[in-house]
Amino acid sequence: MDQLEKASQKSMLHPKPKGLMLQYGTAGFRTTAKHLDHVMFRMGLLATLRSRKTKSTIGVMVTASHNPEEDNGLKLIDPMGEMVTPSWEGYATQLANAEQEVLCSALKDIIEKETINMSETASVFVGRDTRPSSQRLSQAVLDGVSCLGGQIQDYGLVTTPQLHYMVRCRNTHGCYGTDTLQGYYQKLSQAFIELTKNARNHTDDQKRLLVDGANGIGALKVRELEACLQSELQMVLFNDGSNGKLNYLCGADYVKVQQKPPQGQLEYSPWCERCCSFDGDADRIVYYYNDSDGSFHLLDGDKIATLISTYLKELLTQAGLNLQIAVVQTAYANGSSTQYLEDIMKVTVSCTKTGVKHLHHAAQKFDIGVYFEANGHGTALFSEKAEKEIQQLVKDPNVSDEKKHAAKLLENTINLINQVADRRMIDTADAERRAVTPAGLQDSIDALVKKYTKARAFVRPSGTEDLVRVYAEAETQESADVLAHEVSLAVYHMAGGVGEKPKPLK
Image (cartoon, rainbow, N blue to C red; front, side, top):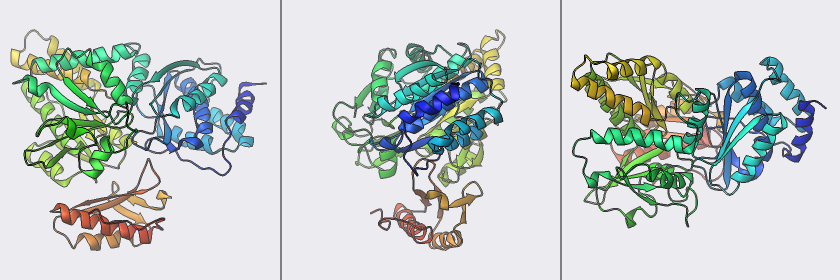
């Protein structure tokens, strides 16, 4: 019996529910955990094939990020810590949906199309979040990898960024770092400590940060990181998983959507204290605070990108480096942030489709590319050219102290940043700013927008959940809320909405 026939037989232990169809989207697979056993096994098979194709280690992360605890999902990680290439997303969908009797043929089809040498060594790193279903589903992935003779490194409980880091470290043979949790903590903490040494007015009260762990894996890993920070960051952790439910009334997505603090925050926070929230797998973050009047202020992805790009541009100017820095946004970015970046800071702004894979790809076109979705999911990318010029400046004995100091801050920033996303009835164009189908929907949206001052509205199918996302912006919060509700109703009526009609936000 050859490997593929063996894999097909073993898959019977992980049966696919008849008629179930799933799609590998922006954030991989996500659905109710009880429907995912067959997907996990088959993605173990696919990761092994991908490893043989690339002759590199591939990552598999079992998580559903900000989704409810009852859900689960999976993300594939390519050799440099990036999301799997789009053509293999198609293979993932094809393999997940293949009925048992054609699974062997589906595997052979991928092997032939990609000319995969099945005698190549295969290596797969696997990690999981804290969901009750994650250990069982992770084992199904391991079974799939073993079935095709792949070598396994099971990291157990890790955040999604940690697994991305591990994969990149292994494939760069240690140049990016050491592929252990201790290596991860040491790299980030050392860079952070070096940066804070040069911060102005770095007082003890500025070191304090309240951290909402979303009752997930981020809380566990914050505890482990704390010891490496040498009190340079004094974190007060809440929603640490000791008694709360994952992502329930807490976490980055809750704070962003509800525009209010998570459960438990007010027990620790006086006014104007800095707070942040992770999501369920700790790959996104938002910051916020309450002012002296008790009003809530959110620093979402748009503000984070603005702060980071402004900081980096100032350092580039001080270092005298002629590198192009750009902020990559989607049509859903706040219009005021775009205007500020372009008109005040003179930073290039590039617009692309929604989804981290599109943002990441666009950011790679610049020497330094900064992107953050409004929900807090993002990073900053430095090209090889940028890293090389910064490192050369740090080592140059003939440059001024000011330039060397700025270059050193840039170098530490690079080390601190981990550089590594039926609703489909709606189709969009123009970087998702215009709805193409269903017919007439965009005309309805345009008519609604005209009723309000400084207003915009877009809709798009979610890449992670079976729903349609609506974005609305207007001169006042009240107008934006009403516009969002009106557009939601238009989508409901024209795109075949199911369940209850959308209700007003307030």
